[in-house]
Length: 399
Image (cartoon, rainbow, N blue to C red; front, top):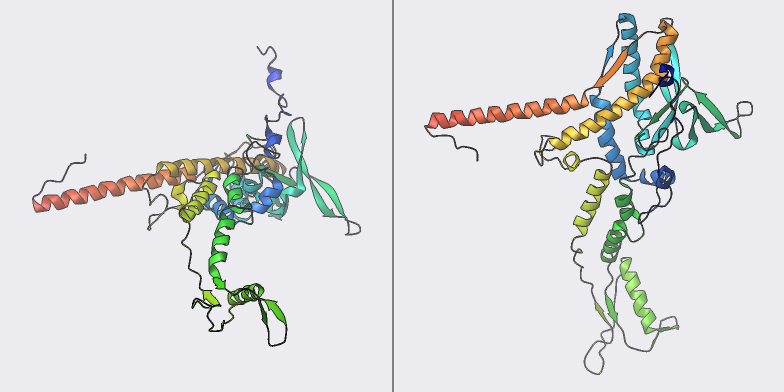
């Protein structure tokens, strides 16, 4: 039991707590390849990974909305302008924490009508940033590879503190400052595609073996003397002919036969191999596993027709769950921006004033779409019932 109410205040007692097993994520795990920042760098070269990140970030940037609750109308309008500017020109930069687990940026400010306003985030590579904490609280971060101020040469490490530095964390339940990359769940299917002997190697080998004309060359034993007077083995000569066929060369053979009437030199053209059974399905399965590992349900990338999300299946539950997760990402981002940028601006310009920034829009859009689908279904049912009444027939009952 807490005897002194002051014990409830102050810095967190578990401020230096680290989740169990966090370091193992970036080392070796049983039955899976290692995952770390260098792997993320490689995965970012995969166009499917880039497309998956677009599917996540696109709705966040396009559909997020914010409401500012504040009794002081001047402060409320100030926050609306700054939050809007942050979301339009800098949210996408901060959201690189989705793929890296965390992001660090330098905050640039400007003066408008005598007040200090947010201007833009200067992007910094996540691998060059390291969080700095004090008593379990983030106070800033260090940035390496910064040129020396005096000479302009060499590289040094500098410190950016709040509110000059902005730090955003994705999946902070895995680590309070470095989070966890959203690509972690997609690592295994990605590795199965790109590793030696993986899907891409299998596909490339099949097309390579069938894209060039090879075939079989029957040759007599012994040697052949060329027009230059050189003696060459018939076996090597036959191999040379086949290799020249692969580069588009022509082929002429002497019309000579052996003792049994069989040609001593004979070329048998290759036959096209059938596509290995299940190869296309194998690639499609890995693609689906990669997107699902990033938290993207199949209804997002399998939509067909002109109805958008889930039109191939008609299921709306995955849409609501997907947008609910995206709404959580929005909530964490605007919370970090509020704590590290906006509250400092309000305090500098207006003093200590109470306000609240409420994000919404994504789950609302899913609910709005669900209501529209229900309304369309009712209208279709009414139209069908009207047609049946006009023809004197009874509308069939749903089983």
